[in-house]
Amino acid sequence: MDIKNIKKKLQFLEEIEKFKKIERGNYFSDQTRGETDAEHTWHLVMFLLVFEDELPREIDKVKLLKMASVHDLAEIYAGDEFFLTGKLAKKDKQRKELNAAKKLFSKLPDEQAREFMLLFREYEERKTTEAQIVAAFDKIQAIHQNISSGWLTYKKHSLSIEKIKEYHKTPMEYNNLTALIYKLIFEEAKKRKYEK
Image (cartoon, rainbow, N blue to C red; front, side, top):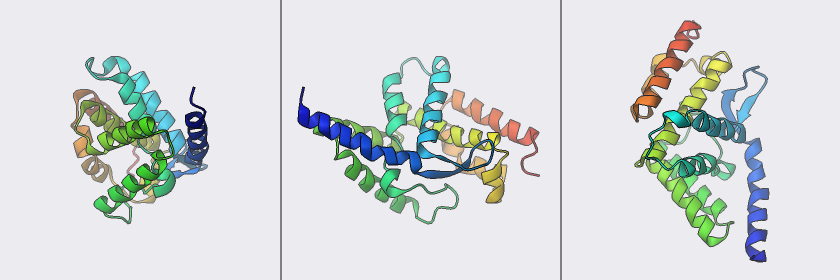
């Protein structure tokens, strides 16, 4: 066992404890406060586990869960911006998050830092099936959270279902499963008359 690497890992784990305090734009179901990045990530991982049987057989499910677990960690330094009201241009946001990821993952032993950076970049590029599935479920979790909270965030920002659908157009088309889940969630939002 390498004591130096173990100490680095413990320091990294202490640093990412801050993830529990990064508030997102989406509210809890009881509307008392916004969910945190850590709560969002846990829920995203649960989505992937619950829908595991419906996912394509050929995908790397371990990679899927690793990617889901690290995809937002850079927000410890970069912060989280609500998707339709963010002040930064997309490229600036990506650059800011990439720099934050490099800074954060550099706290790990070299081999693990490389792995986490590769997972982060793969997620951001959306070229692999795993990255597309995680990205689609990342957005699905956010919309589902708004179903649970009475559409509070979207009402607060006067966002229509059509505007949200337009923003999510690409992830909605990644595969048949996520397309169906999006469809069912939006149907539920309309059924509950959340735009009224």
